[in-house]
Length: 186
Image (tube, rainbow, N blue to C red):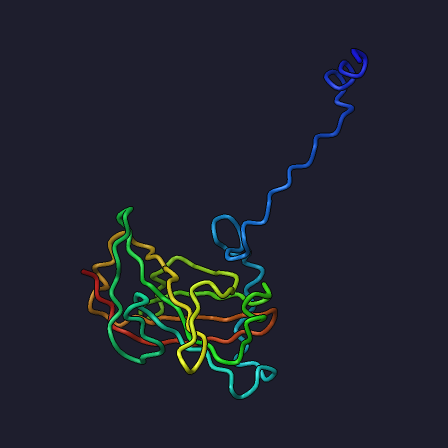
């Protein structure tokens, strides 16, 4: 026994045991919620294999007053407990099944920017799941995704027009919807 321990301590003849991290549920790509950037394909327009009934519409606001694809309206910045600001965003989609939502094959991404194209938000991507999803008679609506401002003081952009964007991706398939809204920073 002493010879065995001596071998292990002096020569390193024992291989370390592998550490296995259990799956944390599939809602997020990594523990910090990001999906690897190599999973983001270029936008190739609406895919033909999804059919003519496929829709994707960007939405915003808290679940109780959530608006989908408004084309106009106001999006109110929300101050978080750590002092930063975010927008509550989501989307409506038609043409996907519940199995598609939980397949792990679809990725959603959100961002918002000024009308001149200046990025105002942190990049956010999530693996699509049925978390936060309800049916509104037209399609599945997902609410409750928070998209954070790059700046801790976005008031300089208050009462300006911003572009909200949601992307839905599966491999080389990418569908994007945008809406312009007036940003309100309280």
